[in-house]
Image (tube, rainbow, N blue to C red; front, side, top):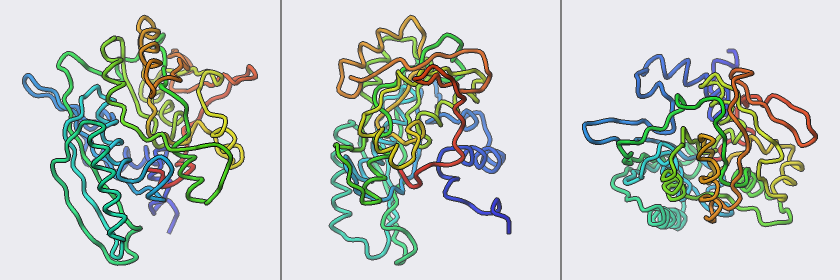
Length: 336
């Protein structure tokens, strides 16, 4: 049979193949006004109440890595998806699929990590499930989470509000999570302290929302900065012009990317996000971010333009320009 008749690792990578899988297979069967927005979380509106609801699965390999583990990743990833809609995360659930023979000691370590992550993000684990499959029928452990948060009734964030002239702000350096995973997976030692940036974003988001002028936000997980920007450009049919020189990236991460042959634009993050904001609010938002540890290296990295429609244009450090393409899949599979 042809290759396109089978699921590939790239289908789970957050790039072009993921987009095609969702749009050609899932949406035709489940399409509705809530799902079709394809935001980080669904926004559910009731009389006098607005909720954000999200779900995600984690299959990261290795399950323990510098700066975190699969448990911490699962909690913070869910918290961050809710935060990107302006919600205050409140409750989460977790479902575990365990491989027969998985060490109880490691499971306890992961559960303890999730407990600490819940405390840090101020969310409560309220329900869950556990299943065990036979030896060799899974790879150690997979975790699926869901989360609910409350959105202020007077707040509405969506790509539909993005317009030419808006600015793009990032809260810090890119590529740390993906490179930390890759080095650990391959047993590669490099100079420098490269750790995953896994962290909750709800507090920094709460602070900048007080300013106003935020149109939309996205956390930069699968597909990295480049992949998310391409998604936004296509969804809005506008152009995003970014400055390579303005994009924060640590020297250690850049060196590792060069050695591994990776483009840092497409490397996954777990504690970074972009906010698309009105020009009038940009400097105040930037000032608030820079007062925090999780935003001290924040930068304005680009601007929304009308043309070329649906494209991301990168102005390079040497003065040239190139189109940033949507990745086919993920350069590093099973990164989250």
